[in-house]
Length: 197
Image (tube, rainbow, N blue to C red; front, side, top):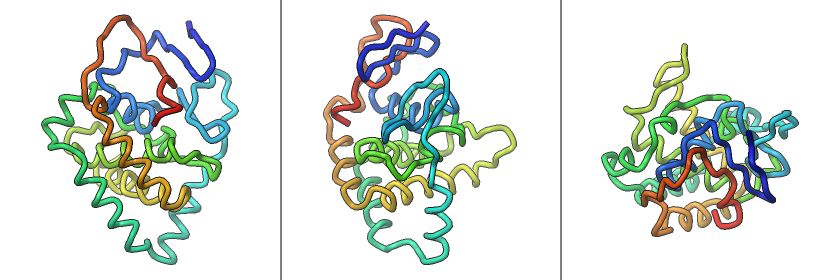
């Protein structure tokens, strides 16, 4: 059963996220085909119809022409905002560590909105911080997952431009981002932060 209001979905089959950080990582990197891109936002669509990703073309272009040095500087700056791995792992639900290459961050469309790109960027850098604890998909090596996560960070900047960087910094600066939320019911509230990511 799915309870849906405008820009809000409650998915009873999923545990309520421990923290906002955990929710961002799960929806970006571990949600597999349960969610995807629609009209520039990450959404739960029970019948498909997601926007086509352009990430692979972006990666190919960057590999051919080189990654701008300031992109890498931005990634390093984001990394400096992420707490030590012990703090990160304490804020993440186990389900958020189950990386799926079918998740939204690995197939970003050209229409993706800045706030959603920022969430994918932050999720990829959080995952890089705790990469030794990630559970790769079956048949995929940890090295391949790390490379894919690095590509996510670069692709978000290539697709969304430099506006993604301050949006990601704002997300990490939120004082409640790493704080545990009250677990008042079963299921994950999905989309409740869309307007303030």
